[in-house]
Every structure is written in structure tokens, then in C-alpha cells.
Length: 155
Image (cartoon, rainbow, N blue to C red; front, side, top):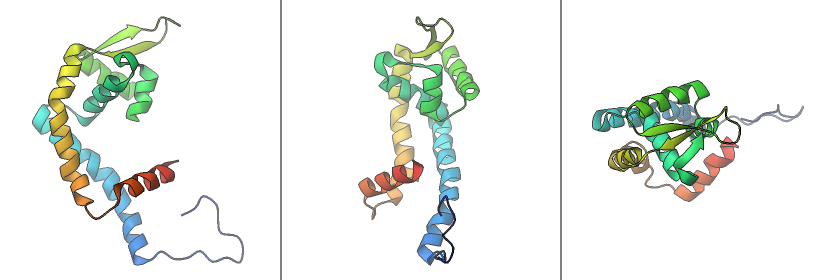
């Protein structure tokens, strides 16, 4: 799987059975894992995985706040999707929108103390779901190598 065709006269090597199995399992993982974690979070915390991620990214940001566009990028969501999540979390008192001092048009999403407390409350459920649905299945794999390989593929 490359971005350019094989040079003329060079045959593309067919996938081995293991390669084929890996390539076919990726879409299943990409589809199933977020949904499984989201279902666990909804059942145990009455919070979506996306809401949890927004709170998590804000908790890790300087001053516990991010521009909406930066939060959108961190959560890998559209700006409109991020706005909907922030609006829901704002209604719960977990996030506050703050106008940006520099340009006056942009807004920050700022994590409130209540939002940080909610994140701490939800963290064990998220961790358990990540372990149960993903990490516990990777016992025979070098995770450091796997993480580096996945980052390399992504970039």
C-alpha cells in the first residue's frame, strides 16, 4: 500500500496471509474501538467518549484552556462538532467559553473546576474501557514499537 504506483517492470508483491489479515482488521478496529469505549462511558458515566476527550485535552492544556480550533484539532473533530460538544459541557458547568483577548473574535474553551472534578470522576471508567477493549488484547506485542509504527503510518 503505497501512494505511488510501482515502477514499470516491478511487480507489486501480493499480501501475505498475515498482512492481509492485518489490513482487513484495521477498518474493524477504527469502527469498533471508539464505539465500544463510547458505549462504556455512556453506560457508566452518562458521558460520551468525545466529551471525556474534550475535558482531558483541556486539562492538559496551559491554563486549562484551548482555542476552539485547537480543541477541535486535538479531538480530531470538525469545528461545528466541537462547538456542539462544548455547548453541552458548558450547560453542565464543565467548560466556560472565554473570548480571546488578542483578536476578540475567537473563543477559548476553558475547563472549570467542576469540569476537572468530573474528568477525575470519569477517568477510571475510561481507563477500564481502554484496557478492556484494546490494551488487554495486545499482551504479546511490543507496545513501544507498535505506537511508533502507528505514528509513522499516520504521518
